[in-house]
Image (cartoon, rainbow, N blue to C red):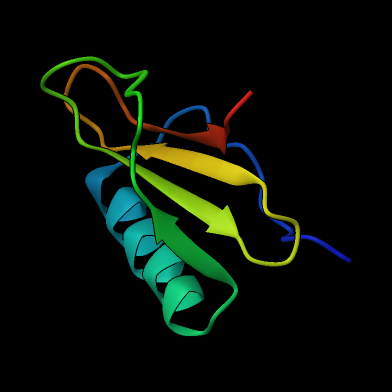
Amino acid sequence: MMGCEWFVIEQFHSPGEYERFWVWINHQVDGGAAERVPVTDSFAGLGFDEFWYKCTDSAVVWRLVAPDPPFRGYWAPLD
């Protein structure tokens, strides 16, 4: 089992960077490397768009929180 080679993104530096990431993660889903899973307990709080993705190789679940200025978004594994 190799796992997904995903790296933490503490913040997105522009709306364009987030949009490119959104396209990339959806290609991961379409290609079978990841699957979208239901958000069972939002850590971001009300008013934030939060999405969870599971690496199909390692079963590690990652969370994506969309930017909402001044918050710049976030991508990291669930602890």
